[in-house]
Length: 356
Image (cartoon, rainbow, N blue to C red; front, side, top):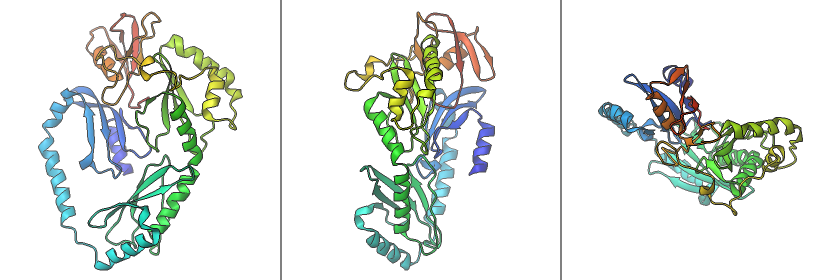
């Protein structure tokens, strides 16, 4: 897996993973002499046959030429899986006994071949979590593959004598170790307007929180130390976000791990975040000045003109395509310099595979 990731990075240096599980990749790829913005969504089991590609219609036309080849590769892999020898009878009887010992109320799903099992568990705050197990033909001699929605890697301690009960117990322990992290994230989700991600998963450590009209803060919380100062940066016009950066630097000594992360952000930045009860999301979100849409392929405008008389927001993809089409634009490495489509003042775009 590490070798594949290294090869991908060499071939597509601007296509980068967006989460710890490596199920979301976003950035730019080159095809037929052009650069295209692309977002790849992988399922939890990382099976490429179930991957989704979000891209422009121009790239879709190019990819359609390879559609038949991809279908042949997927069909060959499915055929190999179809003709794999079934496990012996005691494999099934062993699993039924293990499920009975664990409790049928913990079982969410099992396929007809008993090779995929989904179990549920609740943490002490009442949040329900799922774990998907991919069992191998030599189970329990071989450890099953586990897929979870956690912000940290989940490694199972396994011996040939282990069972589903052992995995479930280790899963519960992992959930309890992350309780403080989810308490922090839940408070942020409930008391502020979250611009991104639109539907946060339990593994998501990033939140883009609205501060005002076209101004937001992006935070990345450490699951191991959720009340400590997170990695953060501001999005918006320079004349608006620079004072916030100055306050952060000046008041950083006020950060108190005994307070909630949200309260610390308010204290350090000397602001009150827009609350869900008082405002609508539309009160501080604007459409892209190029495509006239708010959400494009799952992304919202994250680039803003620095001109205080303008302040027009744009999607990174839209602004990238616009600037690439201007004869007056120039590029230095992954930075493009050009003019704002609205006010014609200088505007800079740093192309990045990292989604804010």
